[in-house]
Length: 199
Image (cartoon, rainbow, N blue to C red; front, side, top):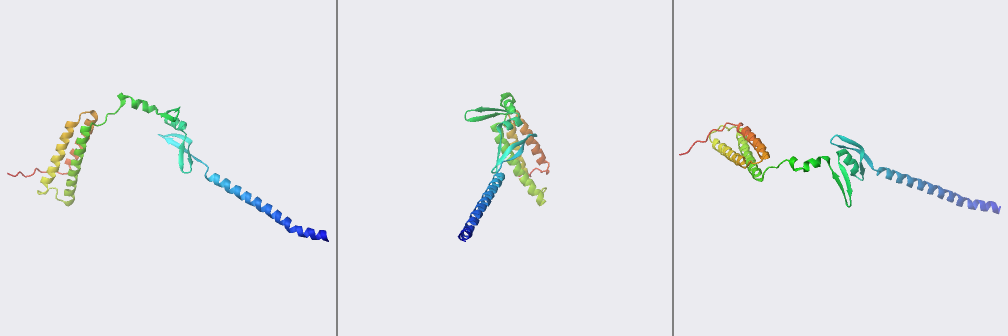
C-alpha cells in the first residue's frame, strides 16, 4: 500500500514536469516563429533600376527604408567605368569625357549680358502687368492711361537695347533673339498711342 501511496504522491510531480516541458517547447516554438517572421519582414526587398530606359532587374535593394544600388551594376546600366581606389570609388561616365573636352563645352551667357537681360525681363514684366491691368479694367485705349503704358514700353525698349549692346557671345545672341521675340509679342497685346506732347 505504501508503494501505491508513493506512486500517487509522485503523480502530480510527473504531471508538472511534463507540463513544464510542454510549455517550454511551446514557448520556444513561438519565439522561433516570431523571430523568423521579424527577419522575414526586415528582409531586404529588391527592385528594378531603370536609367535612361535601360533596366537592371533586382539592382536596387531596400533595407530599413533606404535604397542601395551596387556601384558596378549602376556603372553597367550607365555604360560607365568603375575604378576602385584607396578611400574612394571613381565612377566615370562615357559621356563625361566628351563634356570635359573644351571644344564641346557650351559657353554660358556673359555676365554683362546676363545682367542686362535680367533688367530687360524685369522691365517687360512691369510693362506686362500694366497692360494686363488696363485690359482687365477695360481702359486699354483710354487717353489717361496711354502715357503710363508708353513709359513702360520705352523702358523695356531701352533695356532691350542695352542687352543688345551687351550681347557678345553666340549664347548671348541666341538669348537676345528670345528677348526680342517676347518684346514683340508683348507689344502686340495692345496698340499704344504716343503720349500727348506738352509744350
